[in-house]
Image 1 (cartoon, rainbow, N blue to C red):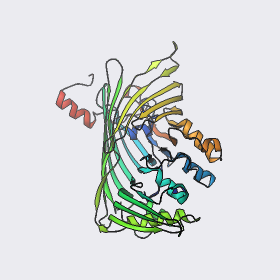
Image 2 (image 1 turned 90 degrees about the vertical axis):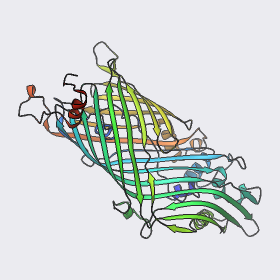
Image 3 (image 1 turned 180 degrees about the horizontal axis):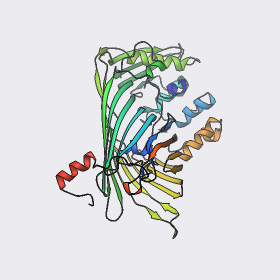
Image 4 (image 1 turned 30 degrees about the horizontal axis):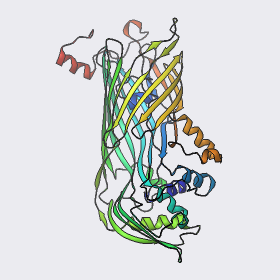
Length: 479
């Protein structure tokens, strides 16, 4: 925790990790069906009726950092000192960090209807969303006064950042209306864990070198949700102190030329934070003592916190989740005459609804039997190009996948953690890490059509959405 705290001064929170996971698109896994609710996770006449993760981990975690701060923060994290040689002063050079964690602790689905090809499911997951922008000078400050040539600076710490963590309990329903269209919904109850947001409007630094101290002044706004006492791991347990709700919906459409199109609105939600939460409209100053000593990092953090936590107003506030709109197109090709190697690329466009993030991705899976290897490339509006890979084993009743959507940065960061100075001092377009993992199983009776059934089959009546569709358009089952 201390390393993250050092890395992002004045944001006053711990960033966890950021990411978006595309490699699972159109895989038909249980994870895919919860993230993209119109996707099926069962195959009639092959799969068993129930799917469950048996509390085994299914998660996606990812982080990236851009800007000149990469080398100083890596040297501090892995070597114990700041290499500030490439930081720029007075040029308004900014660094960007983005963070997200999506962890499913429970995933359960049941196949309920043959005629409607219907599935219902419940899930429990924990999400962490974070993002921040901070200046080169903010990092240099933690190295003490030596990097600062002048004694007075204005507006070099005008940083901003948001951190939000919450639990999400969801109900999903998916139904295939006809041979071309499937729809799905995901209704969620949210329980907020932690929220912090800071925006620094103005800032001033005055250095008193003879007395080894500095004076920090800032104005801006800082929001912090209420926690009884000091925040501990106990506060990650679900409570109804900060309630919220979210909805997700998806439509899958198969065209006449065999393209599979998807349209998704993902986790569009709001959280109402406790009425005992705090909003600080700060305009204050504090002293950074022992500015060149070994305690300077803690002293800087304490001074920034003391400034930000002034002029408190208690009251609830409402924040959105990081909802997304996604559109994708997929088509399957056979690579050989014997139809043993299947190539099924998916092109995806994703837009954050409440933030500025836009990402385009191309997912390239090649499947042979039960084994799939995937190459994923993605490019976002922050000019970050990512190349990832996935290995998956999938049968009708079991699935396992593991991978990374930032293979090379993840490898380089792992080498940096072994104190490889070449990787630590490498200043790339970004520093990042990514990993996702999942495993689930199906159990229970086999899903069989009536003509193939070895026992009395499950209900074979039209599903809810299909009945509505038939009433509106008057289409029969053969449509």
